[in-house]
Structures are given as C-alpha cells and as structure tokens.
Image 1 (spheres, rainbow, N blue to C red):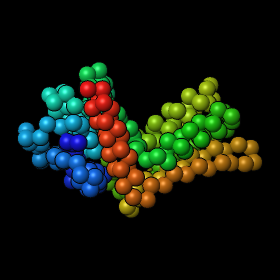
Image 2 (image 1 turned 135 degrees about the vertical axis):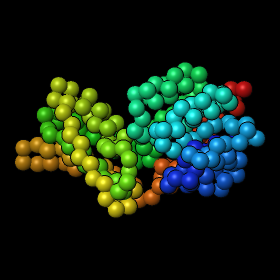
Image 3 (image 1 turned 135 degrees about the horizontal axis):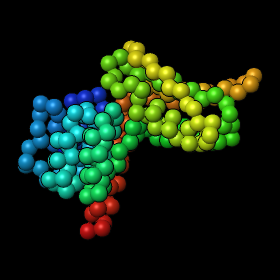
Length: 212
C-alpha cells in the first residue's frame, strides 16, 4: 500500500515508517517541517504527529480522499470537530492507544466497575517527561468508560506522573472496604503502538480494494 506517515520523525511515527518499509509498503514521510510530496497517491494516512497538525492532516486526507488512522491525542474541541467532519467523507480510525493489551484491560476494568460500582476508582498514568497532554488520552478514555459502567457512582479520579523515559503505564485501582484490586498495563516499547496502527491501516486498505 501507499501510506503517508505524519509525525514520521517522532517516537511512534518513526517506528511506523520502519514497520511499513519492512512490510514492503511505499512510504511518504511528513512532519512539521516536511510536507508530503505530490508524487505519491496515498491509499491511507497514519498520523502520530501533534494536535497542531490536525488541519493539515485533515485537508490532505480530504484532498486525496484517503482514510486516516490517527493515534494523536490532546486535540481541542475545534480540532476534534475537523476529524469528526472528515469521518463523514472517509474512513477514520482514531484511538488514544493502539496496543492490544489496553483494550483487554479496559474491558476487564469495566466488568469490575459494573460489579462493584460503589468502590473507589483511581487511574494512575505514568509517561515520559515532556509528554504534552496530561492526563493521557488513554487515561481519559478509560475513565469515561468506567464512569459509565459505575452508573450513578461514576466518579473516577486520574493521577498523572511525568518522569523519565516511561513508554506508558496505566494502573487502575479499585478500592473497597478492606480490599483493593489493581489492574496494570505497561507498554515496554513504542512498537506495540506502531505495529497495531499499521495492522489497522492494512486492513482498511484491503477492505477498500475488495469493495472496488
């Protein structure tokens, strides 16, 4: 497939580029200071850049009428509205976390929250120093889903740490009377995010080709 990668020099974006090339895809790199050329007709865009690039990314996808796989978090309401509008025209997959494990952890925690809605619920998320959005998009998404599962007892508190080179750790702590349950997801490298995003992109492109 032909893929344009925004944020190609970043931590996750550079890994996306490496994986795509390893899988024999044609890659066009784009970044804050590097605009994609017009030589490539993209099948899809994978975006791990910054919220500030939202308007450029959306315009590029709209121009080429190609799907978007986005792992960017921290968008403003206006930036999110642009992505939502794009989703009416092309396929958009937007996730705060592409790792397979975080989806399993979220489902498990929803079961606990539903079974024990009166228990306290706290999320402790730890990421590298310098991570811009705080709390993390993943923590906010988990908190929203757990609050729904807890119903009228829906308070979920997020605690954020920015330290060292942590790839991303999310601890969900449920506290009852005399007991507690802690579920932890720890990302050990950025490949877990990048490879899953490429998997999603490949699936979308394959589906589009089969439909045509």
